[in-house]
Image 1 (cartoon, rainbow, N blue to C red):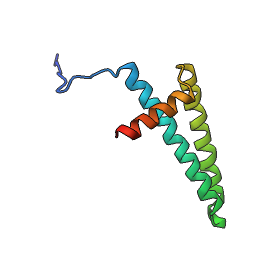
Image 2 (image 1 turned 90 degrees about the vertical axis):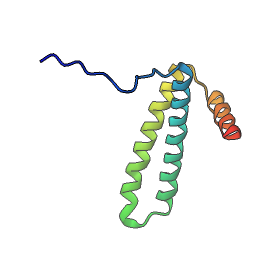
Image 3 (image 1 turned 60 degrees about the vertical axis):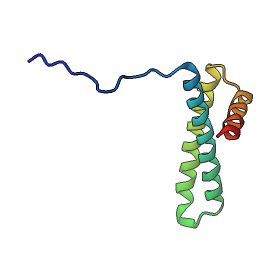
Image 4 (image 1 turned 90 degrees about the horizontal axis):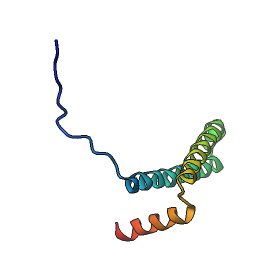
Length: 91
């Protein structure tokens, strides 16, 4: 059986700029997640302290990974802030 399958929608590669923006947005999202985990830890009840400690560690690891990935691609914090503010002004 030799069946040929055709994809209904073509796969479109992302441009380098789109990949950069996606990485930047991931960094910003990870930062927000870390900030939220820290705030939740500060007001946590006794039974949830371990949970929020885990969340803080996981969020920090994720953020560190994404920041290192951004640095390797030549994306600086200034570029991240500039694109973030530009996006919020336009959008």
